[in-house]
Image (cartoon, rainbow, N blue to C red; front, side):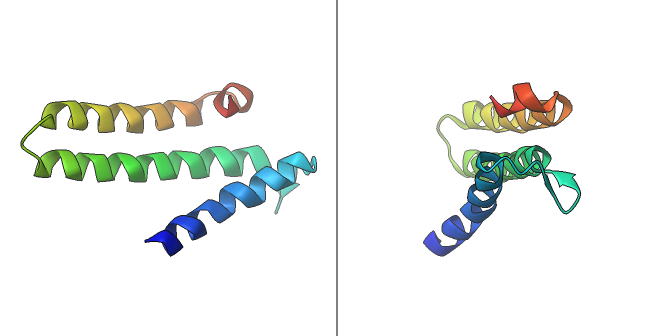
Length: 88
């Protein structure tokens, strides 16, 4: 589990370093777009985990289910925003 967590952080670290060194494009695509889309995917993945956990629990099920859906919608809206506000 830790290995997957560390491997999953590599794109964040890599593209953040590119941004710090002011490299605007990677493979012809804006580095900001890589960061935002990867963050949205990870947030959706975490939302799915929360949803599954919420279904399996008897307590606070509705709160976890609602929170997981809000997180997914938040990541979707972040993709629709201009890149600068989404990176805040």
